[in-house]
Amino acid sequence: MIAFVEGEVDALAPDGAVVKVGGVGLLLHCAPATLANLTVGQRARLATSLIVREDSLTLYGFADDDERTVFELLQTASGVGPRVAQAMLATHRPDTLRTIFATQDARALTLVPGIGPKGAQKLLLELKGRLGAPTGTVHAQAAAGGAAAAPGVTPWRGQLLEALTGLGWTARDAEAALADVEPVAAEAEARGESPQLPVLLRAALRSLKR
Image 1 (cartoon, helix red, strand yellow):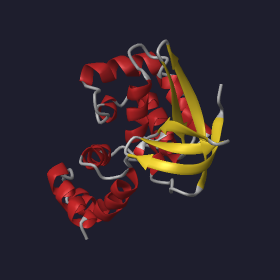
Image 2 (cartoon, one colour):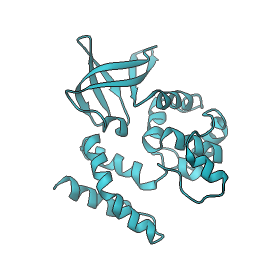
Image 3 (cartoon, one colour):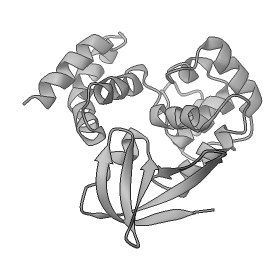
């Protein structure tokens, strides 16, 4: 197993990065949040998972070992391949996913592109207990009866990231635009409303074009 890759970032794309290691450029498929922390010309160290198929060898890159571990555990569920597992991590942080499965939050799982209500229920049953207990404060708040939402469980964030990268913006630009529209989303939530994706998308595009 290739546990990690360390070297200079040679190129970035909406869904991956090329890292030079020993004179060889390795293509790593990464989630947008991971790509947003990479810069061409700078060194990076990414945890990796190698997916072996009859006709291909595909390397996936992660910000840390915990993210890789969750990526691999998600694939123990039937019907979950590397692309679906990566989409889940692109939408929710590892500890948020642990909270989702610990609390059986089907709605949060349906925020992942490609996972519908029936698929979410199936995954909740199959993966319950496999990811382990949440390690952060999210689970503690839930256990105490707190109403705070789990970090990362935002209907608009994953959808907006996907929309912007689908329009050709880099993951780094998309993440910057997300930060710019956070106040717009916060205002809607303060009014007790769900942030509307079209409104956020227009605000993000205005930010990117400045």
